[in-house]
Length: 148
Image 1 (cartoon, rainbow, N blue to C red):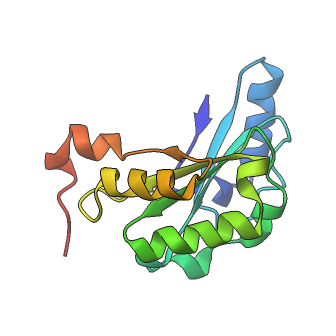
Image 2 (spheres, rainbow, N blue to C red; image 1 turned 90 degrees about the vertical axis):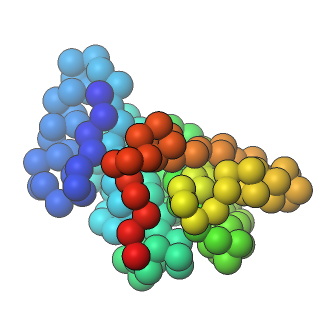
Image 3 (cartoon, rainbow, N blue to C red; image 1 turned 90 degrees about the horizontal axis):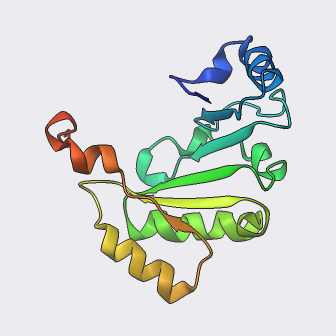
């Protein structure tokens, strides 16, 4: 069961909902934009944290304290729109030793950078990450036209 939003951590009841689902024996994933504290979530949850890169113009909203508490069930996702975003993401991954502690996903921003280019950088740098193309934008491009 995945809890997502908007931003699910804006709802104070989200940790209790997650615990209730866990108590029923379900696997619980919570996908958050990374701006709020993830520690209120039960430790058995899989936390998926979106770290905003500079190309998003939202990187000032990241709560980097979250990166100090992630564990092996958690995932950190960086949406990459440029080489600058890629290099910035590498610095964050290194600073917090993310690849040693959790899953790291690099998601090329559809319409901004080619997945092949990001894949080449990952291979050249021997990063222990997953490439995660934005499949919803590839499969249904008419619903996600690039906006100016």
